[in-house]
Length: 68
Image (cartoon, rainbow, N blue to C red):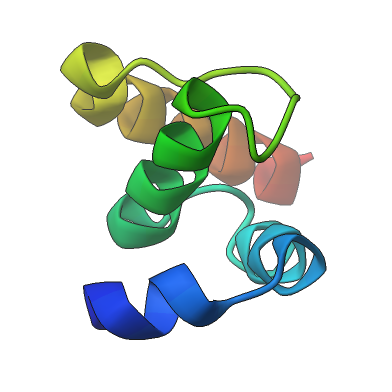
C-alpha cells in the first residue's frame, strides 16, 4: 500500500488492517509506529530497528498457532 494511502487511513481502519494480516505487514507496521511516535495512536510501540525480528516472530507464532 502506498504511503499516502496509509496516511489517509483512520486509526480504526489501520488497526483493522493490522488485525487482518495478524500484525505482519511491514508498511502497516511502519505507519502504526509513526503514529505511535507522534501521539496519534497510544498503544504498544513497535521499534523500527527491530521490525524484521518482530515480523519473523509474528510469523513463527502464526505458524505455531496453525499447527496446534
